[in-house]
Image (tube, rainbow, N blue to C red; front, side, top):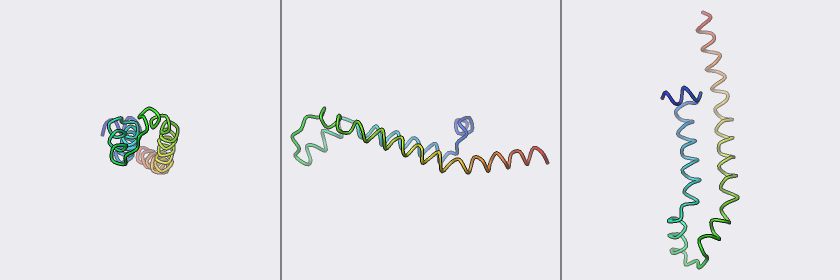
Length: 89
């Protein structure tokens, strides 16, 4: 909770960002790539698959982070207004 307060995020936003990072890292995980190619019977070297994933994964990661911060911003503005109101009164 202290990290959320320092970063200016809610705990839900921080968990969402952690999930974005975990899913992005999962796309590059070699054990997942090897397992998926074995299941579907694809005979392509893992390096080629990683190269193909290299562009869309960071774009998806960036998009999800931007959407998270865009959704979080109105809440943060509201919290700042409430905190200022409490300090004044």
